[in-house]
Length: 96
Image (cartoon, rainbow, N blue to C red):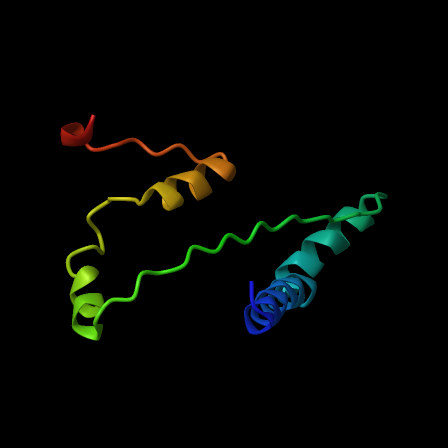
């Protein structure tokens, strides 16, 4: 992995950390838990996976996502990610 990509991945990790630590919703829930007499230790683990994209002409990239939205189809990476979150996805009748 080149240095620029490493820096970008590090920035992504920092952005995730910042989002969680500055979340008013999370802070409110933590405050509520503390008001019940408990201390909170929040540890999150993020796995960042990178897959190098094949170089395609710009026109091919524009058309590759046509009709994708709302179709209910997932890539193997999507399914792996959802499984890691313990989310089960039922396949449409024709795909079984």
